[in-house]
Image 1 (spheres, rainbow, N blue to C red):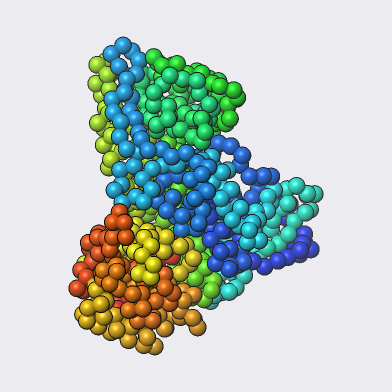
Image 2: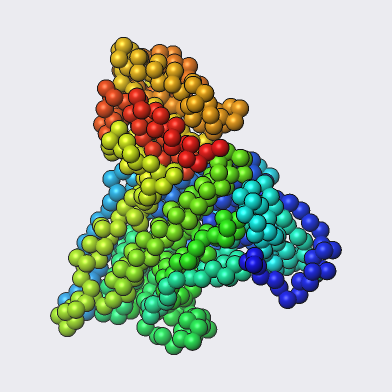
Length: 615
């Protein structure tokens, strides 16, 4: 039986009289996850429609932390520069514990981001609506807008036949959409090849498909409040962890003079233990600020003007049992995983989900890849979600626990808190995410680029354009344009050894059996972007010294040398663990993660890699 949920008021006769339309992908929910996917698919030329039950987008509050890996992802879509202008950078953490006089005192300061390879080594804060606007405005320029005040009343697969399920051109998903700002019978039928539920923690799509959440709730209750403070607290513009005798606070500086406080609450009367839902009527933002002021003693804390936004929540730590139904109806973001917001992971995890998924949907829809490629979405992102929950359990317990004092020797120590910060630094920044071996992560020749870990994101490094000597970070050469990047690293092309290696590689890659020809679909440049990196000296080499296959444009040839000012560049082969005498082919997936590497004389390994999922 096909999974479905049919609203009681939607009769089959009513459905038959509704207007109907077809779309490649229907996205339900226009939060960060849905917008990330819609923007990426729209850029790829996929016919996509995105709807949201809200009458309008978010204006304040909600998620606000954006981590270094997400900065890199946004940069790959050309959206990070605006975030830099509008958001707030956080470069430092501070830690406070109970002092001898009964108040709090600072015990440590440290860098906010400890990952040494982060291109942008800081956290950004911007309210969720501001982040969503990055995508909404980019989509609008290309003709796609969110259809607000629109919600599904029916979602189902119209066939469970295996041949239909394997054919991505079939419109197997049927949805009935209700326009909430119109009359009750203002409905339509949408037939889609795929549907994606990005409709939040209480996801209608997840419930409609009968997908269960695994995990539960904690006993930790927290309030969140955004306001402009009047305070003499010295670390109000740092991300600050405060443990006191009266509870805990996390201080998060925001845009302008705004500050967000996460305040631990001890009044459990605001929680309905039958439903684990919060009754906000039992508290107020003024009470949250009052609790925060008590924790901050001996420093003062008052509100300037109006409180911008507030909420109260109970920490839930759950992961969906699966992320799709037959790889046709999928879920992402908070619909898949819920956790504490204090580590700033929610919006990042959600956008990471659909950044991972979008290119896979595009490849299947364009007929470039087998349907089995979509299975890697759950394989990669559900494992990430489980790791996220494991981290969150440790972090939430530490953060919500009482601090160690003379009277409470079993309490949380600063060393324990700092240990978790450092242990999970690569994970929380997103920099250390590593996908396990699969059809799109093949590490048999890892030694060819020993420091470019297959399954992790491509490391940033500055190289120099051979044509004009301009220094460029390699990340700026890896846009999220749905193409695989084929990075050819060769020694000195002015020397016969390097030149011979490139000629031999060109000959092999021009063969009909080569991945570049076999999976070209008429024009390999629409699927593969080839770049060449040489260890030759900057001023001794011309971009025309490499064969034409490796220089489709003058900007595609770079040297591993310092720039003309001697300020940046050089050392790239060493940073990547590539022997210039051997060389390497590095395959970077459309989402920026290293898919496989191989020595120059073993390019058949790259052929086998793509043969595993490409058509």
